[in-house]
Structures are given as C-alpha cells and as structure tokens.
Length: 439
Image (cartoon, rainbow, N blue to C red; front, side, top):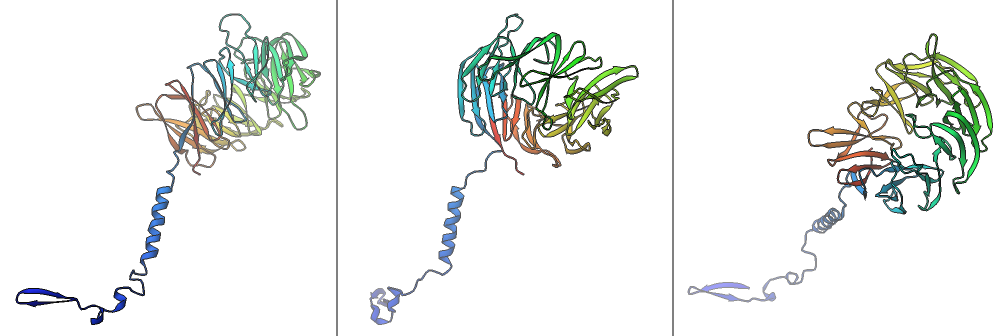
C-alpha cells in the first residue's frame, strides 16, 4: 500500500503482496510474542491464585463453644477432655476437642459444684442452712443417664476410682475430710453399699496414693490419735498406730513423697514427722521452724512458712534447698510454681525446678489460670484502663510468657485445659476458646 499526492489531494494505491510485502507478515510462521512473556504470565496467574485461595491466619484465641449460664451455675473440666456445665438446672457435656455436645441430662436441682469419680458425675444439691439431706445423684459420664441416687454424701479417694459414702462434719477441712458415723464403699454401677468401717467419734479421712506395687489405701486418723490403714477393696484393717497430738487441720497430715507427713508441737518446738503410710512406722522427725504447710514438690516435700520454703528429702528428712523470699509452692500438673505470698495465684514467682529450686520461667506480674495446659501454664495480666486482660503461655525455659491475645472486658472465672481456655462473661455466657502455642 502506498500514498501519493496529486494536486493537493492524497490518493491511496493498494500495491498488494506482490509489490514487496513479505507473505509471513499476513500469516507469520513464528510467534511474534517475546519468549519471556509466557512464563511470566503463568507465574503471575499462579501468584494471584495462591493469594486468593490462602486462608487468613488463625486468631490466637478462637471461640469454640458458647453456653448460656447463670451467675451461680457450676462448670468443670474432666481429665478425659470434657466440659461439664450445669445450665439453669440442665447438665450438659461437651467434647473440648471439637466443641460437639456429647449429651444433656434432664433437669436436676442446682448444685454449687460438679465432682467426678468412678466414671460418674456426683451431684449433691446445695441445701443452704436447711438441715435436710439432699442426697447424692450419680450421672454417667458416658451418656448422661442417671444411674442411682442415695442419701448422704459420696466422696472420691485420691489416686483411686473407689467411691465412699460418708457423713461429713462441717469444718474448714473440705467435704469428706472429717467424717463421723460410718465410712462405706459404694458400687459405682449400682450405688449399693459394700464394706463398712465404723467411726466411733470423728476422724480425718485421707487417701493414700499408689506407691510401687502397693495399691491405694484409706487412712483414718481418729480423735484419739489412732491412725488406721484400710484396704480399699475390702475395707480390711491393715495397720494401726499412734500419732502425736496435732491440730489435724485441712492440710495436716498430708501424703507427700510416698510418706505421711505430720506437723506437730513438741517441748522443743514445732517439728515434722514422717510415717510409712502402709505400716505407720515412724521414719524421721526434723524441726519445722515456722512452717504452716507441707506441699509435694516433685520428689521432695516442701515446708512453707513466713521464713521461706524448704525442700526436704522424704526418704530421711535431709534438706535439699531453701528459698527465703518464697512463701508457698504449688503443683500444677507436672509443673511446680513458687509464690511470694501464702495464698498463691496472685503473686507467682515462677515455674521452678523442684529438684534444685531454680526458676525456669519468670512469672512476676502475672496471675495463674487454674488448671493446666499439660507442659505449660496459662497466665493473665490486666492491661491499662478499661478492663482488658492479656493471656499468655508460660513454659519452662521461656525467657518470658508468650503473648496470645487479650480477652473481652467482663471476662473472668477462667480454667485452662490443653489447648483450651474456658471463661465466664458478664453477659451470662460460658465461652470455650481454642489456642495454639507459636513455639
């Protein structure tokens, strides 16, 4: 094609392909697109597709279960990974792993706390100041069916699936700690009474955990200071012995490090004496100083008082370590936490190595969430004004707790389980949140 001008006018002349334009211009034999263009286009498409399909990062705390509850409705977390909650009289069970409701039981009289043992939920309605025995109702943990009801109180034994029917004595020692009348074994399947052991006056009831090949046993410390060890399977009397005069309060005596440890006064001052919980033979006695409590800490027993915390070897009472700035210690699952106050919880020093007393994770300024995450703990800290509370994970070896997120205002009464945080809200809800550690 060409253009020429004649007398000021432009004339276009079509020369065709025969006048010099190559044939391949009309239908080229090779691609006219640069070689780099196709791979770049494919890469761009893949990048855009990946960005569009990628899921947003999971929040550190994500809501899993929400249950409407009253301000006094109790809830509990089981060792099997279930949430039990009594909502307006109806008992509900949820699987903490996926949030699925497992069962719900018919309306029961409200109770102030939920206890489990022998594969059962043991419900004892709150009777207040009215002297009427509300009895105990046993609900199956498997399907929520009511298996039996019986008069009186039914308690569990530490380290055993045995259930015991007791007539409790009102005291600060806790339910079932001080008993009177008769102690009887209860069949978890039927609620029927098995063996019975009479208690002439009152006695302190303790469970002796399994030690090696020796099965768990029941220990009764009677008012006349006679201690009696009974077989939990048959109720048979296995051993008796006299113990020193002591206050026999809520935490005295205790079973720690495989021994029965008793704080008691002498002419030379307060001491701690150790007895074999199977034979009741005296093992050793050492000065207790100002100790007001004995706690298991790892393989040692820790004596806590206003002058500090002392760890002693239960085998012979020899001192292992001493921390004058501490006031108490507490075992949380497989971890031991030291505190700067006797009450604990509100003033934790850190997660410690019970073998040496060394601090493994600093917790100053944090508060412990009840329960255990397994190999770690959950802690909280109020932040600024407005009711915000930060949640963090604390584990041995961490320089500081690992921040997760903050909780909505009005959140409280929390408990921890592995990968789960359960809290009440002022809106009348019980919320289960899932979390994952970053490390």
